[in-house]
Length: 342
Image 1 (tube, helix red, strand yellow):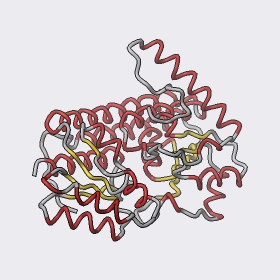
Image 2: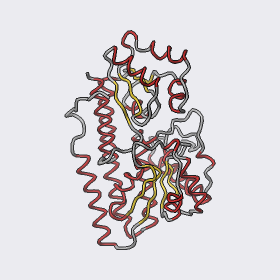
Image 3: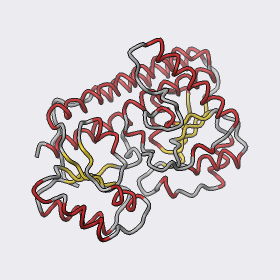
């Protein structure tokens, strides 16, 4: 992974300081409101960290997948994980077939806890009937969102997880889409408020602070768009595709290549040759790999890029130790910007 120059125009320490204040707000509410700490179980530490930012000291979060050595796609849950889910007051998952293990744990544990599903807030999720789409009419948008929330609550109550199976053609890595994450944060705050009404104001304040930081991430992506719109990137896997699109960049990776790598299959020779040909004549500006997976084809692509002086960077599927969701995404955006300006 090449080192990217840090840009002073991007988010500095503001993200960390604002989230620290959000955590303090949660702690103050706990001191004033009292009551039991809410047990939150997240499929990965991406969603666990977001829950911590919104819940502060009022929540105790357990993330089933929490480090880079664990692949959520193929994760095998344990009996301990089943007990953890059984005791949860709130469960947060990605959905879309990404973390199917959490649905299996919900079913096997008999958990009746409400389930927040991130993909339901994505523009691209085929089952949401467009509830996440923006509208010029704020009242219409609010009404559509309320209907979608009611539908999501109903699905959670019924513990019907059939729609969480992998959906062909849908990119389930929605935590790389700031817009989706902002709406997810708002739903988490609403669910926490249902569980602890006396602390609703604290959850709302923390969510507002978090969403403000997400909007700063979006502003940084818009800056990349302004400076590098249309630049072509090669993604060995579709993990950061939403972030790349938000930055105004064009993913030129053949679908057959990224799908094979993501599924742990060999890339067909013809597809590999098609991919390598993209590096001729400086068509590709940056290569982005998945830090949590590796393979011969990925190594060959990185080698081709290195040989032509094309930078490559690696993004992960879990939050690195010591980072928050915001600081992690900030670092990813800065790395992307740095690679594009090399």
